[in-house]
Image (tube, rainbow, N blue to C red):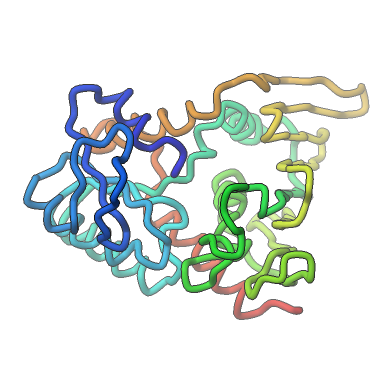
Length: 311
């Protein structure tokens, strides 16, 4: 959700006053593009009675930053993962229940055009009874932000919510979004010599659904060519979804057919749609925002993996 937050907000609300605040409370020396005011702390935002806040600090600090806003009735969109501990998700949910403040979590892949189609096809039973699903994401961590030392970034630091499980939790989230609750069967976490990190840079996970589908999930920071794909194997055929190419292909005994492909679709549109959807949630209108209760299940699954994995 970090992608062009200020620019997207200004494009959606050109007449709005846009506040920015450092997660550490530091006042930056340089101006922040598209921002009108730099706040020193959350109290300033509450006193200003802002209309909504996006919390994009490192995940271990989400509860600390979001709860005062929720208690003040300020609608809050929290970057994924919602937190890095179930205790924090419980505390956030308790604040929501008590104050009734609209709160959503920024799992933006739900708004990818091919994701919506994949979900619809699965709901319509295009592949029949599901037997297996294979989910994979891999991208070389040093390439994420080439101008910075990857070892100093959030992704590489456990105390900032780093590691493949939390940083690549989109895959764990959309697996549950598409397939329902997941039960952990087996997991292997590794820290390769390639990057020299203290957090896991490779994760291989096997989970199952209530209907008996076996789901294999692979996450890594080491693949030099970015890869993000998902496949579903069922009684009527196979659905292959390429998230990078924004493409869906169906195969059965009669052959293969591309059902959807739009590789030029502007992926920034995911973030625009997510913010627009959150505004609908604030207005108490129909929406498809990821609720904290849903995002909490991803945190719980990660905790189970960390507690029960093999090396």
